[in-house]
Length: 354
Ligand code: F0G
Image (cartoon, rainbow, N blue to C red; front, side, top):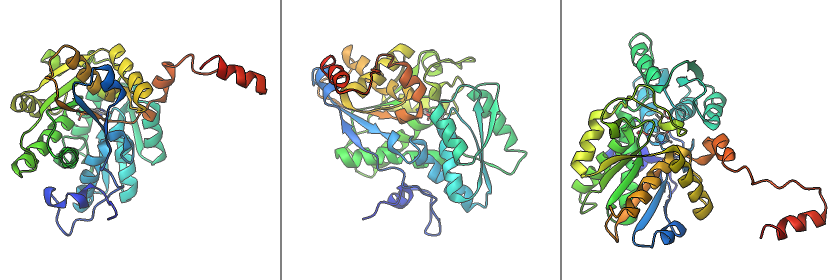
């Protein structure tokens, strides 16, 4: 059967009716890839799976929430949407607004969004409002302006966003035949970890799994309010997607960790980049820096013995590596060999690098 997006796939689990006209780009249904080489390096004591959300239509998990948010905005007669964003939400909002034939306004922090995401927002025709401030400033402004202008907010404070995003948990349970023991996610606003927990709980009460996972949220060390236990005013990290000091889903996420017996922790920028490179070189999977913090955390917890042997672990990779080419290229300074176009020089380039 042709796959036509997650609203049609999970209609009975979502706040839609037969009259709802889904605005879809075929989001969801992303691969769950079992790690091989990295698992071997770690002693093969666990089953580690990657939920590769970078393979959504605009290259991040945001599309799961955006299909719902834009569908409901259009259904309620809205002609424009707005969001604050560290990049991926703006790319997704821009694409789904284009599909719906409505206007997207995106508020982004100047100089702090990855090139691919900016390109997406621009090419889809969003109105880009760049501020001399960070995501948290943008979010505050968006909430305020939505009270004075005819625009629907499509940040994850829009409850339809989390409804769409919870479907990732459904897919994982369907594929594994049960919930994993642990689910690791990168955390910024903490909407996605909250959405996953909602999905796991719903499928558990539907009898589709016999347990729920421990939810584990990882942040970047310079931007880790959940780890510190209070808001951070000047968050900093190379993982610009999660450069957030005042998370919008603070209470929800605290509840998730408590109910699921999980935890929050953080990784440094250097550790984040090391894991990003490890994934590309050892498994052929390219994710953006913010995404690799989930696996980076899982590897750290496996090494300290925090995770019992034989556990099933899912790590979400939230966004595609192509989103942030600058950071990728800056890590690969020796990768290019420059030669003259002769057979001798090509042969030497191969033989010297076998
Ligand atoms: N990973 C990526 C690649 C993201 O873009 C984000 C959030 C997160 C993780 C964190 O998810 O906020 O639900 O905890 N990006 C938002 C944006 C803030 O504007 O694109 P969260």
